[in-house]
Length: 71
Image (cartoon, rainbow, N blue to C red):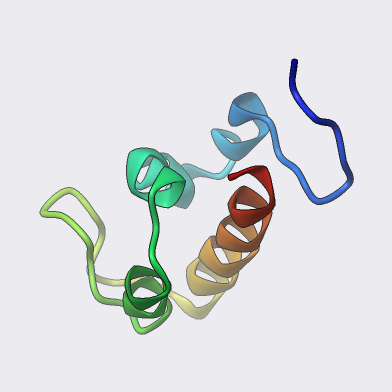
């Protein structure tokens, strides 16, 4: 049973953010260090975009915050 809260995004909602889809699996197991790497624009894997825009970084930050509530 999924715990519903305003801080939580479903996988379907997360997939609505194109820049998040590549990192879905990493987001699930993210450490604080990895989170900082994303916010600094450093890719976690070869599949991650290297040219993160400010808006993308903010989207990552929002997604990471919400995924942390789900963990």
